[in-house]
Amino acid sequence: MIRIALDGPSGAGKSTVAKEVAKKLGIIYVDTGALYRTIGLYVQKKGVDKNDREKIISMLDEIKLDLVFKNGVQDVLLNGEGVGDTIRTGEIAMYASAVSAIPEVRSFLLETQRKIARENSVIMDGRDIGTVIMPDANVKIFMVASAKARAERRYKELIAKGEECTFEQVLQDIEQRDKNDSTRDVAPAVAAKDAIRFDNSKLDKDQTVAEIIKIIKKKTKKKLNKFYKFIKFLFAKIAKLILRVKVKNPQNEVFGKPYIVCSNHTSMADAVVTIIAMKNQVRYMGKKEAFKVFGWFFKAMGAYPIDRKNGDVGAIKKTINILKEGDCVGIFPQGTRHPYENPRDTEIKDGVGMIASRAGVGILPIYIKTKCNKVKIFRRTEVIIGEYISPEEISFPEAAGKEKYKKISEYVFDKICTLGENAEVK
Ligand code: DC
Image (cartoon, rainbow, N blue to C red; front, top):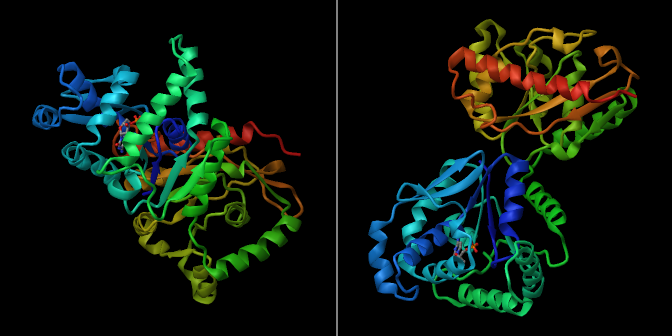
């Protein structure tokens, strides 16, 4: 599980950035401002003054809020009905700002936010996420931009929407909201002590997303043990020369959560080239017998022994446990090596589907591309890293048991083959 807290003042671009980051990392984006806005909407609809604290507090009993996600897009259900974009007006923003300063409103929303963070990998944006909602977040970012830069962006947006306004008005609104949000007694929008302060005044959206992803990756990268690092370094040098390994799309690698690395399988060297290509440590299983002599070496490299006599059950259980401990594992969907064959023509096993489904993890597809479909000395080997496949993408709710495992394995292997087909080997 990965939890990212993204706090900061209004209009710093948190939601735009969080949406993109969530998509790239395959996690849920939770917009907590929408909850305050929904309460603001309810208050406004009831014709209650936004500064009438007593009345607002007494109305909380009438409100039931639920967060729902459709294709990764969040909506808030207000007493069972989706509010959609009705909470996105300037007027409701002012109501939200007022109700969010009421401690009873904040405690009313606390559990809804914490529950979703407990049960999912999330990037959550708001004002008090790093300080109150997820004080144990893996990464805390406090995103700021100068009031002028934010007003300029907002002004452009409003004009594009055809709304009438002046730049001065927009700037004034932003300054007013900043003041409300940062000077109030309860949960003022201030950075957590361990948050990284990030100013994006001079960056556009894509640059901001790229920088935020960099910060997250750096913060969540698992520390590799020294021996693993050393051997990997040595191997990498040798493999670059002998296997001529070239990595494509290294930016697709995902950090901070466990998943299965799946590739086509043509040679014993496949695990080695994958380990070299990835920054994360990838753990492969090995025959128990091989551990008798070189056990210390394999173990230090993260490999784990499998007793073939006890069949696949032991292997599956062990692999699920390793994933649950937070490590990445490598599995070949084809089960055995298939050199010199087009992977599309080979049979695949259901193991990957079963493990991914039972461990609730996603998959990183990789295609190991060589001439003639076999990794060989002095032959160019391209390791093409595909886009992360999230657990939701392979949830296949309509299928169950073996049928579901098969579907997942086939889906993933199709992605792997497509990666290979779309790439040229030089
Ligand atoms: O991010 P936003 O503009 O949708 O937020 C609406 C209001 O809610 C804003 O004035 C600040 C407040 N808010 C808050 O106090 N705490 C949060 N976690 C999120 C938003």
